[in-house]
Amino acid sequence: MQRNFRSTAKPPDPKVDLLIFKKAREMIAYGNDCLYNKQFPRKYRVGNAIGAQIEGAMYDILDGLTEAATKEHKKTALTQVDHKILYLRQLLITAVDPKMNTAAVLIPLDSQRKWCEMLEEMGKILGSWLKKLNS
Image (cartoon, rainbow, N blue to C red; front, top):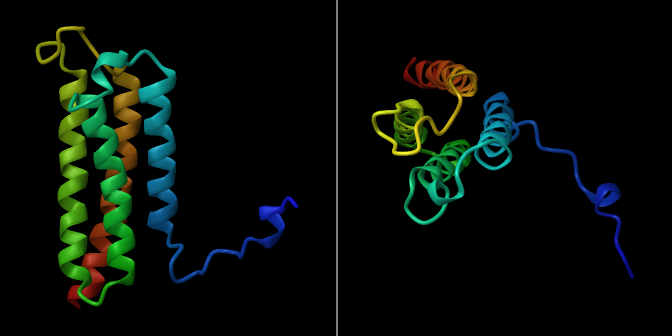
């Protein structure tokens, strides 16, 4: 007997499905598109290469946001997410720098700019969340 999961799925809880989660999912979808559907070489995506670190950082951000939404001590979790966003930005800058990579530019500059704009938008939402917690 097959189940239709679309009809049995519950709508997302508004307390848990915040705007920043939607932005994080959009960023992950765009990042996966850049890493897997564009010209990012396979040897830079596996193991401990920069592509694997970028992918891990994206999911660490989503994990940290989930932890912050459900934890009592949100401030420390949000600070860690802010650190991960900064880390991902630095990885993207490294992926664009031809001096750092033997295969020239790993991510096209336009894609990197759009990706960093998404991260900046998430950072603004995160900053307002932290500001609300401080007041």
